[in-house]
Length: 205
Image (spheres, rainbow, N blue to C red):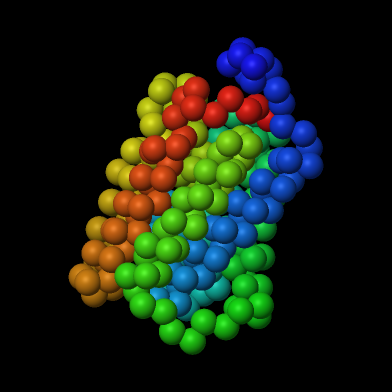
């Protein structure tokens, strides 16, 4: 089967739904690991974790609220279908991160393990969402837009933004935890940079 044949194949509706559920679940588990270890991660999720650490507010509520201003970009630049899928995915992550502690109890987790395993889970979850033209709001929307319109790698762009977020985390966390968070962000973005390239995945939604 030729590459051209693959390029014409479209994802079915149930495939998009499955990818959204799987991707948001993986992201949520990764965020729970980060939260338990007192770490921060990338993008709007990283900002939400920072605010949770600083104020004690619920991550899911903060994450959902921070994403609200970005939906206009999702609809205006990527289309209303992408905007709707992103809105639903953000809602699912907010619900899953709230519900996960009721499903599993994590008494303690090593920060380095939380960073590497959590970063891997978030990266794989985002990869599943990106390949089905779905984001998690905020920086993810901007990263996808820049890659599709200007050829800027989503992973590398997000890495630059993450560095800024981690620098801000120095005011909230010990240097050791910021360094560990940086390792997790590197793993997350490496997964995206290696696997989410223009032309690498030919399925369309």
